[in-house]
Image (tube, rainbow, N blue to C red; front, side):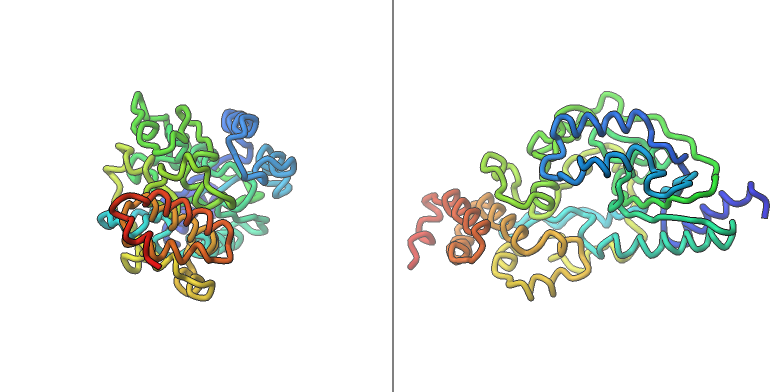
Length: 356
């Protein structure tokens, strides 16, 4: 096979595996993205994600050759996961970010990346590789943008002009030279809808995200108490947040995902019952969320988030469940249940608060 035919065949193979976008970036971290990352760390915007600032991880993000010696190219892939609008709001149901409505994307994407690597090895001979789906020390979005998969928006997400930003990214590092794609120009213009829509003001400026205020980080990554001043701003969100993406004008072109695994198996995946979440023991939690991204956040954090959402709902039907949570062994859950009960301490909730 001629060298010129390989890129086209690689793209076709990636599409056959279910990836919507594929492109190649050279194995040098884009300088502008690296400086933005270092500035993000210097400002402390990474919050509790201390692993992001570890010296060895910073070094690897600066130089992919420390991950795979001899790396020459990065094959970047993306799959579209939008399965439609969320269910209508319900005061006793929480909201889950769209990417978590179906199967855990790591379990879907990583085997397919390994299949792509095996195909490339069969076509090009001996190929060393490393495959990552947002678990490696790489600036994935920067490489995906460099490969031509989209442009970085003011909400810090990768945006494709046809698919929007409902995209999951994977990267294949390889030690062979492949022709690099052409980056797309930034197309946000003067739009600031994402900054204006962020419930907690986590988008402190265009292209800047403060993880300490980001609802996705607070509900998933953050392990301790949610800062009291931010709790009312979480609304009914119990796992992640889609606001800065949902308001983006580029989403209007976004078609439904072709991947059945990313669609909600039932309405409870997109909008779980808060009362059921609060009542789950460990076995019920693992059974309910097996194979989904929610499993990794753990029962305690999810119940903490459910208590906050119930406090924000203003519905007195939540009072008995929150009162029972005051006796839970978890100090984290007890604290947030007490906060929710105090927030519900209105005339409407008073009868429930006075129950024996």
